[in-house]
Amino acid sequence: MKLNVLTAIVGLALLLVIFELLRRRQLREKYAVLWIVVGLGVVPLAVFPRGLDTFAKLIGVASGASLVLFLGVLLLLVICTHLSWETSRLEEETRTLAEEVALIRTQLAELDSRELSNDER
Image 1 (cartoon, one colour):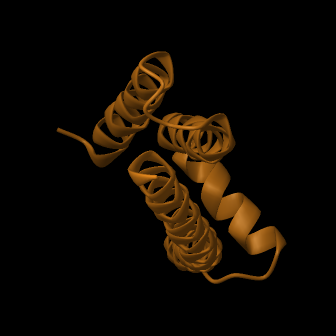
Image 2: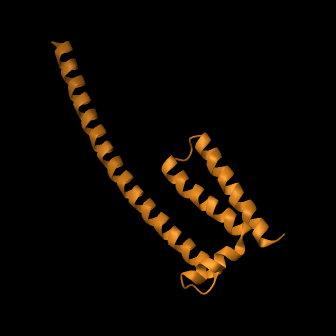
Image 3: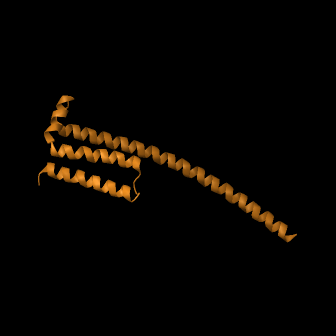
């Protein structure tokens, strides 16, 4: 199978998977947009592979493969940075919620002990 046919199939499969995850509400829209853009970018590149080389030469890159590699690494770097930020934010939120739950449990225990004291009188 030719590489451009395989690339087009992978791009279309990526789009189908993303839409299915969206339909099942297993992927948030803000992440789906990124992957839809990637999928929509892969399919035309597979259909018109010379276009990538032409674009690469226009911006001063030696070959289309080098451009794809660079953009792929850049995309992964951006995704990793965003996910690290999201993880940090969620860890902080989890810590805050755990502290609030601990305070509520303490207050509830105090109320229960007061109620038991009042019942004993």
